[in-house]
Length: 282
Figure 1 (spheres, rainbow, N blue to C red):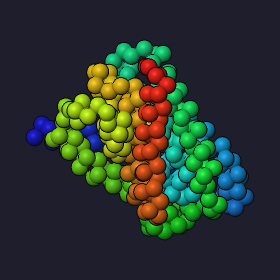
Figure 2: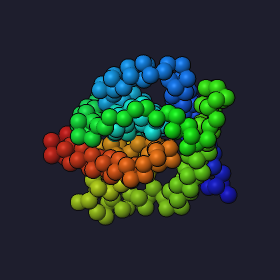
Figure 3: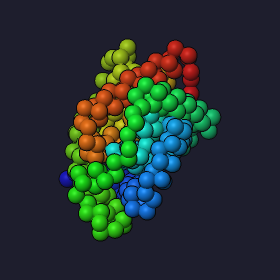
């Protein structure tokens, strides 16, 4: 019963933390739709070329909220795929608080964040160059799919979007947290230890668990000497917190969502391999 209560409490706390980000993202989208019109949408679209740089910088904040907000903005085609990828790759989740609480040096923290941002921005621009499509913002379509009754006003509409996604996140996160609690972090560590040659691939896979807990596990395993720098970076790059969870709920194109999932995994592994080849140490 104690484990159940801990899992429920942790899930609710994590969910409540991202509520402001979700609401602000939806409120911004509703504002664009109701107050600006075609001219403002054109400005947003033109300025989107710098999106990966902005997304890469915003993603380093230690919260799942930015990745969740980016998923919603991409589903409404307000930002490009490259911007979404940049946010997902740079998202740090709970890595930063864990490192600070463990008295990790500022130089190490700065190096990890800098590498994540630089890799995320470069990958974002590359993705936009390869996969950028000319699409009009689809805020209205997103509203129709979620039955939010946008005609009632932007505040009520944004709230409607937010609570539906919030409930979805809570339900799925509860299931994931129970699995993690039952399996145990020690078991996950053993998987990595028993396959040192595959640590990059395993870490990137662990990082893709759509929950903030994955970054906690990876950071603790690295600080405990279980993971190397390359494996740590592979997992931290591929992880997007609840961002992918939100994307799978709000993005209409399911095949595209799976491609983004696969792309994140490949980029995470590539980032880890690059760190190993360069001999970077944190």
